Image 1 (tube, rainbow, N blue to C red):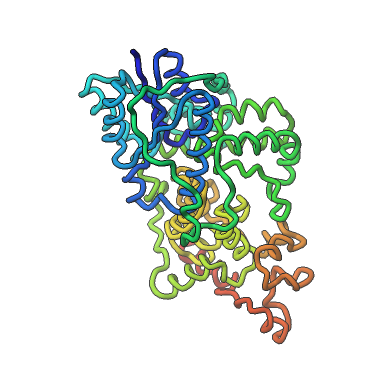
Image 2 (image 1 turned 60 degrees about the horizontal axis):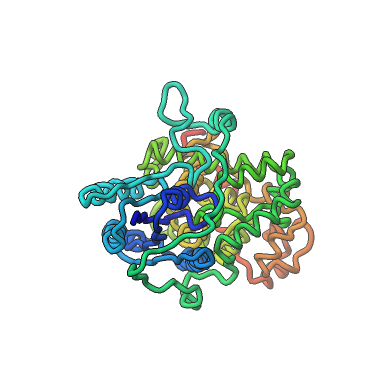
Length: 460
């Protein structure tokens, strides 16, 4: 009897899943396997928000498999050891899994291949499971990767995503393969760092959200994606991160919806692939500057106090604080707010981008090494931004993207009663009125922060 193991990683779905489809098409029985990776836990990536969302995803995946006659096998420990153990228990001939781009994922793949081949088994690694276009599929003439997005987008757009694969109708799991218990979101209730407004996970929820998004809101995306109070974005990033949605299928369906909004939305999927091709080519950029600037980031008690105020959403700049409080409450932040809060930390406060990237990864349910680290580097001026010295002014950004102050009032309740433009500049209020708000004074003057930044970058 032919048996295949399908190792699920960041692809927790049944629809458009090449490894699962290949295993089912091969005939015989299939062991759907997820391993709670001990090394990921040890590296600090297993934070409460992502663990809660993961629990939803695994339960939904198990339910979908059971509806087709199968079940999800869950193990915990070293991935290579557990996959080899399951393959031996099931007497499997082969293992299927998705390709990934991080240095850890590539090392894991190498270890797994050697271990399986040593036991007489084959490993099949499938591309375009977690990306639309594989890293390295489009490259410039003189390099192994694109360092600028626009030319990457031109070539990326010429390629069509592979056809969307249907979910399997049925599968059988061989007898005798034991499974640990499925994780439970409720077990994390009360955990420090668990956001009370965290969204639900799972493929069924992801597909529901995608369908609702494409039925209408996507049409307004090009014009409204920066509207902070309007919240006019898809909120699909957690589902793309955990793979409950296929990025290729999302592109196919968005293009069928058509229109400028859909095309603008598809560009965000291209950005996601862009960062993955960059990380695949330069794995060190997860912690090291892509463009070495030799920045002398501020350190010491003053910088630490500023970073603490930033993390707490107590900088005295309402739009910055609103974004950071949304992050803490939801485990998610609007992209415009991500850009602004990152610019404020790295350029106005001149604190190392890695400090901010770690904080984001401690809370973001879509916390992703490629997107998170490389977006931070883009904002900090150490990455691929062609204007590395740009500084986002939080007051100007507030007037442009939260003109009525609704986003600030939602997330900074101390300012809910402040009317007009003063909600973005509470330091301009009369002393008595300002003292009664319970809201901090700015940690720094914007002119002072800009002058320090320009001096540090040698721009004066």
